[in-house]
Length: 76
Image (cartoon, rainbow, N blue to C red; front, side, top):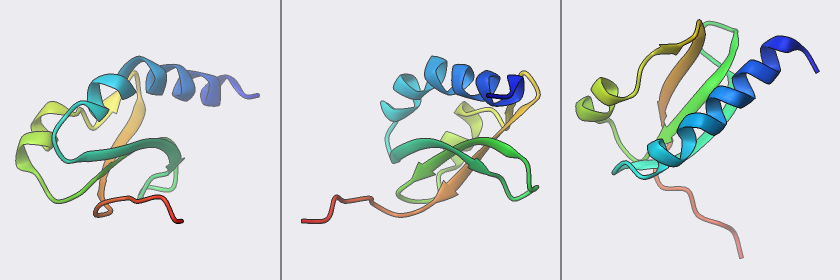
């Protein structure tokens, strides 16, 4: 595994519990950002200015992107 991916995983683990506890956050994952780089994707139910202020756009040069996905439900 690349050092960069390991760093992304570590940062995600350090922050995901806190982020998932925030209102409207429905998921935290790793994926391609809109800039084409791997980073952390925070999925939300709806657009929130408050979340954009609380979740940084970058941590240790790793991009963090908020994407509005709506509510996520498991399929039966």
